[in-house]
Amino acid sequence: RAVTASGQSSFAYTYDYAPSAIGAERANAAGLTGAGIGVAILDSGITLNSDLENPDGSSRIVYSQSFVPGDNSTNDTYGHGTHIAGIIGGNGSGSTGKHLNMTFMGIAPQVNLINLRVLDARGQGNDTNIINAINKAIQLKATYGIRVINLSLGRPVYESYTKDPLCKAVEKAWEAGIVVVVAAGNDGRDNSVQTGGYGTIMVPANDPRVIAVGAMKTEGTATPNDDLIASYSSKGPTLFDHIVKPDLVAPGNEI
Image 1 (cartoon, helix red, strand yellow):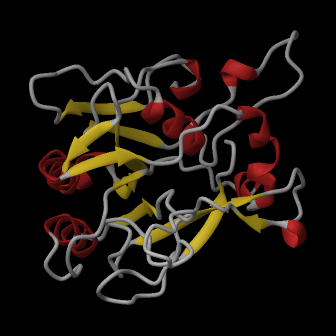
Image 2 (cartoon, helix red, strand yellow):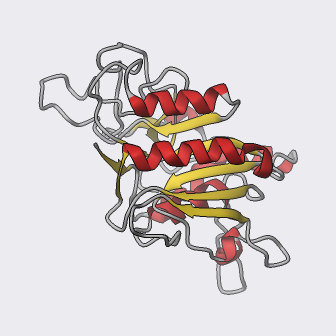
């Protein structure tokens, strides 16, 4: 079962308003920076850069492992995992300096990152890769303080979440006390079965125990009053089980 990365785009400038639109700057000012928290990122790998370091230059990528068959590298040859890691935990150092006029910080700029590579150089993977990585995250929970698993990926729904092996895996993580955050998907424009894009939530976002996140547009402002849902963002209810999804939306369009 092919699983693909979700949410990649090339217009990074629209991140200008993303942190303020969701109150991240206020949270950081109040001391909620992710310090001491581990986030397991299951994606195409993470390539270390200055944004993902501590002030002393040590890496905040505290553990790395590849689950891609035949490829032990944990570097990101697709570009998606590093992108996601920056949104989650970039410290802004790579965009700070006398010749730069805007600093781009991640939502939790002091979080520790657990790099579990499940997608190959084409941004593709399968259930087995992801299930093995989820099980590893559960094993590493106490060692690295893993409180969150991030899955910015998904695949089509083939059966009820109660039978789906990928859903069973994320439920195991939930039972272990880990918050599982999953991209809702990018199929909101899919009208192939004349549903107007409804019923397109991907696996494992269709599981009721995960937080399924859709994409919204900030409309270039920090205020939520003018925010809109991105047209490509997958819409519920879920296939077979008819669960209301996504659970929330966050800035995603053109980030």
